Image 1 (tube, rainbow, N blue to C red):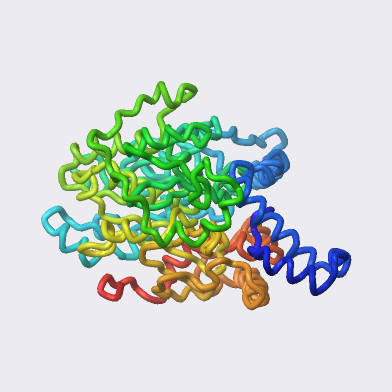
Image 2: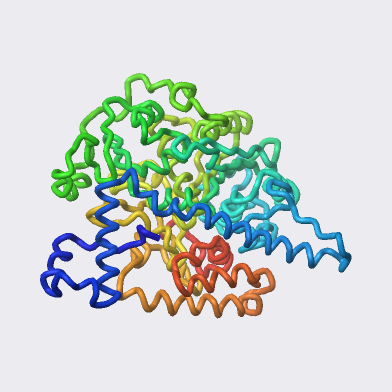
Length: 522
């Protein structure tokens, strides 16, 4: 939790020392907290390459906790279904069609709401354009996207069974993709069509942050970015998750993004050759200059040799695997359009996928883009990136919808301030703890930590725990929460933003939201 902090400027820190004396560390918890926060922020600025280390120190304990939790849940489930016969308890193997992830145990729902088919939302080919204008924000399509985002946490066999048997759709493929920085196949994504022949809809779903995966959380808390001339600054960890480079060798980003005269920068836009003494003077200038005047695209987009830049790659990288398959599917299904979705880290990858399509001038693919839906998505770039992509995704109608539930911590990361420069963009659909929808430019409490929001956050966490016992009676049996979800709510009493990140509340928000999304009001 080292980087969940409120940035305290060096000036304020000195003022605090002058006011309270040099022995102020012994005078209470709050001064110590501010000092810790200031030191951590300073560390993140001066050592961007090492900012993942504190979370990675918890990797083994987190994995052990996950195994204990999953073993307990699977054991309880097996005992219930063992018919009271000794020796009949069989625990499923990881990767089997009966093995469910921690996210799956938080919310066991697998059926689409009211079993509606996506064809009703997308429409027949002859009326597709009319439906795009009116029904892009339909609850049916939103429900499919959040359920697909939740399903992406499961293994391939579970995904295949749910898509084919329960949703009555067509499972296309599942990818475990290579992240060269992490040296692991840590990016998962699957693709489905609404039907095997003459499909109307193709859906791409990226897996989000695993609750007990230190690598995933370190990516969310990573503040490093890569500057693309005339486009803006993009979160470096998310580019790595898409398989578009490795910060150890910055030229890999240039080659994969097909950009000439690339400037490699650290998290604050400082050239890698810039000295530390120049750091403070650069904070306020990067975002206001509107980017470099260098060429946006190369005259001949670089042809990437995966053997050269990813010598240890055992599987395809996410961006290239999805793009290749998507092109084949769009060629096969002439009337189909596609949707990209994801929860948490998956949401960040979902919106960056069309960003890179724009960079690569994939106009034919982009013309078939129906929508991008993200749920609990962290920030992916700066204001310049947002302005650039809004010009591509907001016309003739909005195509990008960012859904945020209440006090969810992850959409407030990385920070939106003068130090870190990250900004959200796109239409924000914000749901409070009563599942009342608001269309806003930015979710309340945009950086999460603040004294005036502290008490309401804890009061709201208490309400969410109480609501978990009442939901089945108030909303119906499908909204009844199990003991794993209740346990997560208890954790929320300590860190409210963590429990609010559960896909369960996003599913409830879409299904119980008080207001239907109307494109005209966006």
